[in-house]
Amino acid sequence: MPKEFANAQTLVAVKDIRDNVLILNDGGLRQILMVNGINFALRSEVEQNTITAGYQNFLNTLDFPLQILIHSRKINIDEYLIKLASREQAELSPLLRSQNSEYREFIRGFVEKNAIMEKSFFVVIPWFPSAIPTKQTIMRFIPFLKHSKEENDAAATDKEDSFEESLEQLKDRVEQISEGLSSIGLDSVILDNKALAELLYNFYNPESIEKENINLPDTQDEMSHKNTP
Image (cartoon, rainbow, N blue to C red; front, side, top):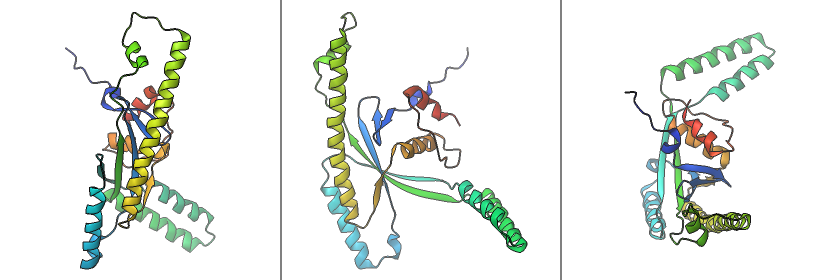
């Protein structure tokens, strides 16, 4: 009997990427901040205590859950090597051209033989859908009832209004988190649609190096195919 494999779409809880937000299958929203790191060990004892106290105060102000991720992956130097090759082509001096070529090959070989890792820090801010069912939600689960075009249009409008309202609530949370991180010396930036797609690809393809310049899919079906290298 052939072994059955799960559909890739069932393994990814993300339904869509829109307005720099991950839309989950259950209707929940997630926005992700990339946060810079600080070398805590090089700070003085007074600075370390100040940062620790500030971080504790930051956590105590939260009234919703938060997810903090540390993403370690093999560094991708493809773009750097392309830049070196471009400079080599533009170099007029044969000596400098030769040195550039040797340096480029040294970097390529060194990274291939040694796992050079890069760490990225992310904060995932959630927004959970309301548990109160609407009339349109209930009607969708009654298959024997026919819906008019007006009812379908009204349901689509309500869905869009609900998304916009949830998005505003999520933005308030993101602003609160961003300000809290800034207070302890951590800068953050919101991942856009393209960066979110790249992050998901890299999460679900741990055997590969960091992939960049992924074309953002237009449909949920296309997105599920990002799980294959």
